[in-house]
Length: 86
Image (cartoon, rainbow, N blue to C red; front, side, top):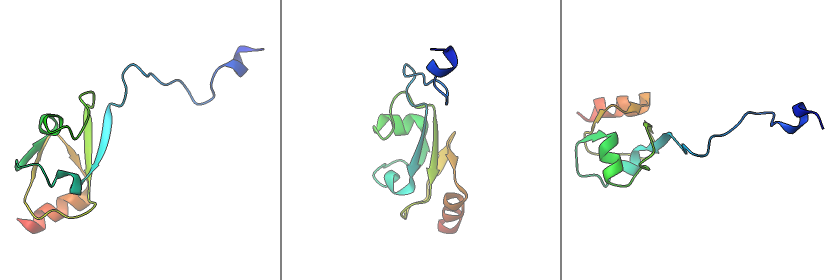
């Protein structure tokens, strides 16, 4: 059988590194007591895996407290919600 048929069509996955990015909902952050959310904070509270290097937070659910994000990508909906709360 030719090598073109034996190789996968979509590419290879590296299972050693695992998942390096993660997306979270805003409602997942309700139980964190800190006001400043960072990647280290999420790892300490076991919300994301220790292997994760990038996190993006989307507006799903609601949050009544003002949060500040450090080194985390947020969606436009979360940004508008935090501006309207404060």
